[in-house]
Image 1: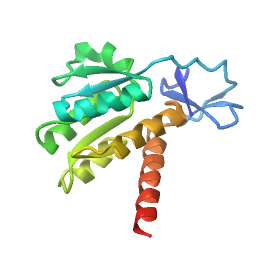
Image 2: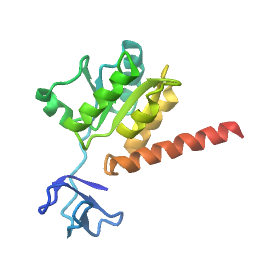
Image 3: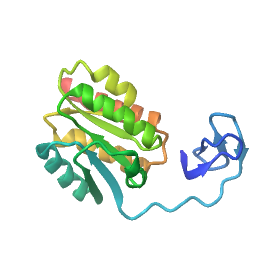
Image 4: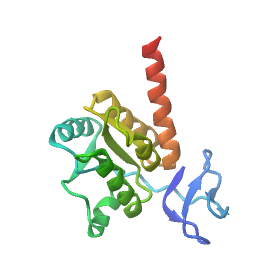
Length: 185
């Protein structure tokens, strides 16, 4: 589990805690150290919506409010000057007029805020889905359904942002596959 904003003293990458919080480990260089008290999670979670259409935005804002999240809107692609606003976000949700633009925007956001999980909204049957899955932790399909957006928010809540992004994505995909299997049976 990612240990807040603590960086490895040797190589500068993020430190992760094992599940028993016995040691902090750098996954890049292997540095170990005892954990200090875990940083407290903020009372309000911040979700940044980037270039999200009004119809999608209304649904996401309503669900975020139900989950106790505050929403920040970026009606355009954030510039490097907006990095401070992005740094406080625990989740970035990206949508654009075309799927290729959304994936390119997600890549740019990944460079600006590498530790923040990203969700990309794509239309169903988009040719950009494979590329989006390699760039973002979550792929949500438009037209949006409450269950998909709730699934993302529930995964984020249950792990509180402490799980490394690839594991968050895998957890989300497993939940989606389990639900699909139950519906099929």
